Length: 143
Length: 352
Image 1 (cartoon, chains in turn brown, blue):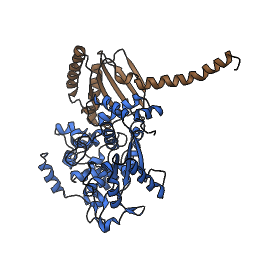
Image 2 (spheres, rainbow over the protein chains, first blue to last red):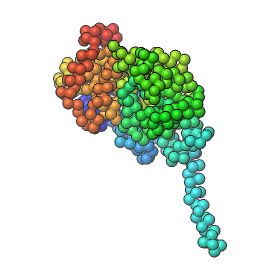
Image 3 (cartoon, each protein chain N blue to C red):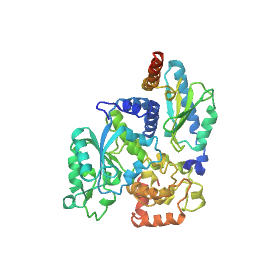
Image 4 (cartoon, one colour):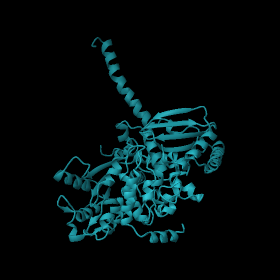
């Protein structure tokens, strides 16, 4: 639990949410018109716990939710507005490390990186190679 | 690490995915108030960078700076920095000791001449030619000069290395000075605090490795990303300040309700650091330590306040006993400027 949540100050609504929603609307219009992605770093904003809850209520939940196990847990969900994603990265102990609203078709963290794909292909080949050699050995009667 | 291997290749070999690197970069970019899109650029830059050689020298210090970095609450994210650097010398952490330890420092200096980063915690003794503080028979002064000569840049971590800290206080029998008074021909980055925030140290290192240059610095050579805003600006009690709701004593109803402590002498408005956003003790550190910051100057507020905060119970949900807080307040007041002077300072800053 954060200090904000424990304190009465955390229950205050500061009015920042309306400004954040306006910014999201602009980014979404831009995405629709140009395909250019955008993002808002929620940690950089003076949001109280009540503000955060209000923003989450306004944006709602959409069709996609994903949980990641990457250096601690992460949660990604599409809000009720297509193309508006909420990305919450957590530390090992569950505290929020970073929180971003990404306005994009698919958040980058969900996509496999080419370097990881290459490494995965090599790993898979390493698993298959002994089996193939073993299979060849059995066919020639050497197995 | 194989010669020529990039950090991306190294991380892949260790089973750390690019997603983890992107998450780390997102975390660092958020901490440093970089545009959210910068995280992708930072992740790619880190992946292409070589592992950075770092030599860490500890002089007149208490090891709190090292404790802050290594005992962070976020082992999976914050400690990723240790995959990005090669900590070639740190006499507290390294396994080698004695002659072998010093040989490691000299080897790293030779092999990475002009490219290694020098991190210093602790002030440097000048009195009696530095004889008050030596390591392996070498004075801190001599070791600093010879190690800084081939360094790419110097990072002074902690208030002692950055500004002299407690050893620099009168009567200063050891002639303690900050690093910047000894080294004048290298870029110096000050990450002050007692101790400095782990994220500020790790974030600055990650930025240097990724972009090959220091982050933007303020007039005291501190990264603006971490020292650009006052604690007051981002304090969770700030909404009460805006509404004119102030606690009148440390234990009145207002204080319990989380009202602003400004009228009790909180120096948050003139203390520039990121503790209000990054916080301490795994992000659960509360404001009693700020309350203790009563009538002291901003620079000292950072130093002494964070010392006290470090001593606060780390167990989640535990509270500092009120009697302990009162003892701290008395102790701090003994070494602080008079309350009238503090009030004058507040007025000068336009916060009356």
